[in-house]
View 1 (cartoon, rainbow, N blue to C red):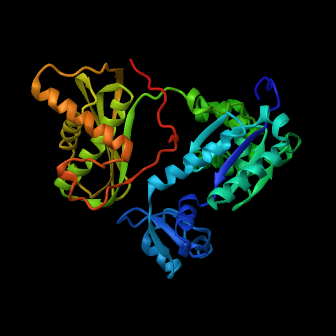
View 2 (cartoon, rainbow, N blue to C red):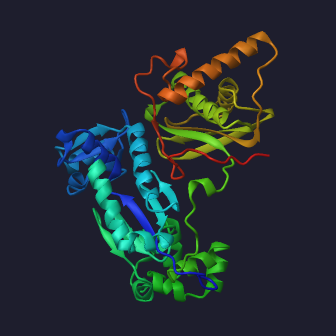
View 3 (cartoon, rainbow, N blue to C red):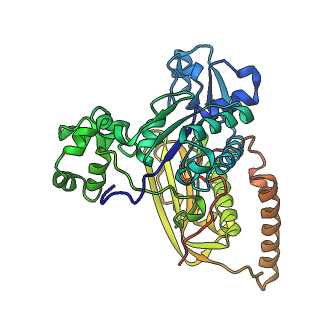
Length: 413
């Protein structure tokens, strides 16, 4: 670390193998050992492919036709995000049996700092093997685990052996290893950054770590120093449990649609659905937002967005929806729409107080009753009449920032 770490840490990165597909295979034994691909309801894009399907060349992001061409006997399974979030929550509880320092990186990944657990449970390898055995026994699932002195290297290690791998990067191995690791193998270096680094003659992490940091700063700005340290395998970022996570600045949901939409009336149904989810989530945490954002992604993956700021903050489904519709009507939809997102920002706390006027009072009571049912029994157990003709709800995008416990802290003004 820059200036040296105060102590030698032991970090685990746990990555569930082909998580969505593996959960489906365990839920339906007839799918076990067969090539399957998880897709959204009515959607043609592969979300996750089982390892049996990957052996035929089926990959995440393929459209259905490409996947079936690669594997004619591929079985397509409509994804069930509730099933995945429930399983992920249960798996995270296993992690917390070994350490309270657990950071959920995404629905199928987590970092664990087991530095303080070694005296109680034994070596990091012992802890990793116990976690793997518990997950296999309770859920029939496999995971790959990387063990290293920091998060960057633990993530790198977990990617080295899949499925069901266990890889250890020891401190004394880091310098030699980084000499041969391609820069694109590091978490945080995407296609654009890789191309920029390649243009500077940088192909490996070792080359990145030796490259003049001044040039990296001029090329990449403030992240130049971070890239330089990454090339050396240095990362002092802590494992951050959800209860210590940075306060969020917005409440929102995005949705990949079951099919590309062109008709305004169809788009409005999904906007209402999203507005309800955002409003209910905000009401649950006692916040309201003054600014409503609408994001639209077209069929060619072009993404556009606009926002509208109100005079008063709101967490009302009706008012969020009304603002989203106003924003929608400012767009000239030149292509079919494949994704919609609604978000509120400029948050403030809102005290629970029933309106004085009878009409608004009845509306608030009805909203509270709907929230109570949906919070307990699941999204849209009670819903708006205009949504009742929808056979399926949209395929919700589970954010990389998803947490099993939901939002704990909301940043407000």
